[in-house]
Image (cartoon, rainbow, N blue to C red; front, side, top):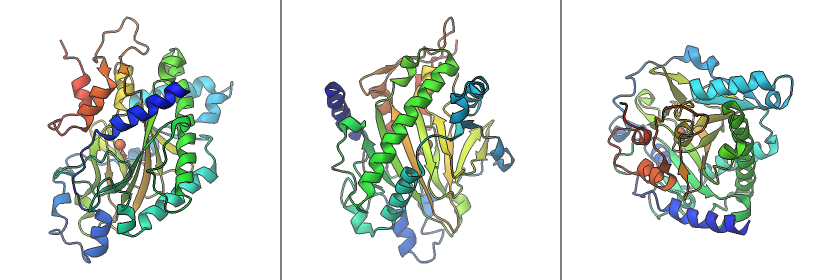
Length: 366
Ligand SMILES: O=C(O)CCC(=O)C(=O)O
Ligand SMILES: [Fe+2]
């Protein structure tokens, strides 16, 4: 335990140094202060390529739904495991129902985050990494630069395993918030651990190889204000895939916005009030030699409603390595073995030149 605690805090300080934090406009404040949002006022957020690919709402109902109670029941386990394998390989995204996290814990974090973003700007900025007009709050690795086009404010927290937690930098307003974050974060870590074991079964590998790969968690709570003027030209979150092992998303107020890439088009995800949305991250794609896909996604903006979400990224030990070995006996390696630390640096760097970090982990095709 003690060793884990020590490594938890060591990696914390290293993780938190990854990002650069430059002033960006707080979009919630911009909306509140700007009166009518004209195209001029939001020029920097206009994304010219936003409609380069078709949006296919007719596929929304096809996003797989995995039922944990079916994975646990002997009669249905085999069929549900096959469904999970299909979801990871073909979609990279799936809803999870009967996840076992209590309504009380979910309601607590939902209310906490709504109240937090309702606080006055100067109160929130007290939790910002640097004073001033920042996009992110919390002990964040706020990655933003002058090119940042995302129409979102965020609270990003590094949340260590419960036995190694340092909550001192977590927001203490609203007053129950720390407790809510602590409970939600621990429950999601436990859930992710169980899910990793089910994923190991889909690959027919020792659960230890998969389930002990995550030790850290980042929570990112995102607030996407409505955009009355040209919402169809603004993105809450630009297209990206997650640099995590697994990401667990809670769509806080069920306002639609997330779209995932499928066969070159965008499929909107319908929020499901009792579900958690799970996605395969880049590191799981590398570990499975590309069998499971880390899919690009983006967030669109509503003209009238705010959207709130909480992403929990599970990241393997910072000192570790990720090898493309899971379920690959006799297979040709398509990915390099990467050091988690190097991958994280690459992921957060501004030097990707339009490529995905994942492309750098792929071996050249011969
Ligand atoms: O807010 C969302 O729905 C998704 C956010 C996201 O993609 C992320 O935090 O990586
Ligand atoms: Fe994401």
